[in-house]
Length: 159
Image (cartoon, helix red, strand yellow):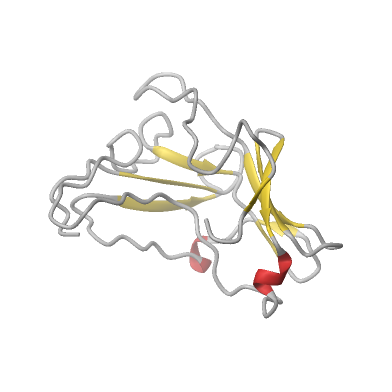
């Protein structure tokens, strides 16, 4: 990741996740955040309560606000190859023991107050709905705040 300053030797971007959920079984959650240090203007990545590293503020010298943020997943394969599954390989179905999910998603307004995006504020980007999908459920379903699911079986996705 160009510009990222790694500070944790044990946890890093791209490292293997030690525990995973089992489809229809116990869900394993990882808590992470990306936040701005207002003093240094660095953007910090924190996973499970541990700072992993940061993007220096100088990389974002023109950034005073953002019009879009994103949550979800991505698979990458060489052209002509089948895409791997995303998450548990199942499509979103509003049952959070089935597909990969984010919950308690939030953004901040100009006063630095956290709030969850409404369904009207969101749209899904899915490049091949036969292979993957994403659904934002807002604050419905009793999952402790704003949530979304994403995933799919992958396959011949026409990369």
